[in-house]
Amino acid sequence: MAQYTIDQNTEVRETSSTSVIPVGINDDVKLIAVTKETATNNSPYLQFLFRSTDGSELKHIEWDIDPERISPKPGETQDEAVQRRTNMMLVRVKHICTKFVDESKFVLNAQNFDELCEGIITIMAAKSDTTVRLKVTYNWKDYASLPGFPPFIEEQSNGETKLKINKQYDKMEKSGAAAEAEVAESDESDLPF
Image (cartoon, rainbow, N blue to C red; front, side, top):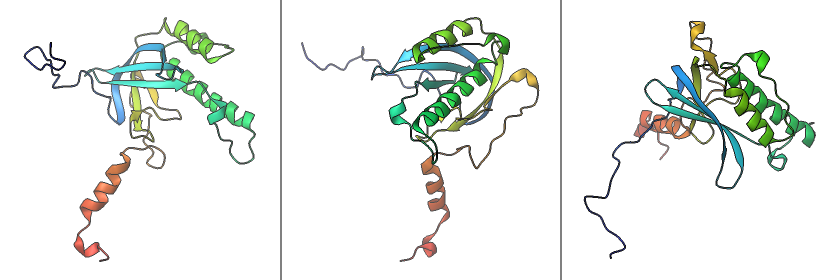
């Protein structure tokens, strides 16, 4: 039998099964699941899966804080830097979760990241079916993602959005897009040679 066979039984998917929620402020989004996953390097992470009415999805991931990978700011100790990063993660998680569960019920104490993930998943099992708006920006790798700092999610029922795009902090174009636009706008008379 041949090792490589291409015939009518070889299936080719001509379209992607899901698309990513686009950069910008997106209405009519639901939180589908909160899960604990494991990366290929065996590192655990907490994943929030959002889906819009058109089927587009966005996965927001929170990783355990690795003190070896944290650089203190000037005047900050290593422990303070780790605590700052941990607090930033906990603020993002609370900002998301309290759109789906009552803030008074979102109370959790955990000794480690695994306990934190399991506690959040347990609390979020009782989540409401709230429709939200998401602010989506590009991260430093040019992937659509939630910003690092709130506010980036709000209940849809709040009327007109209070989420804002701040051009100074919110990356709304891929890194290569700005360079491509500059090249497209130039002509040969701009060249120094």
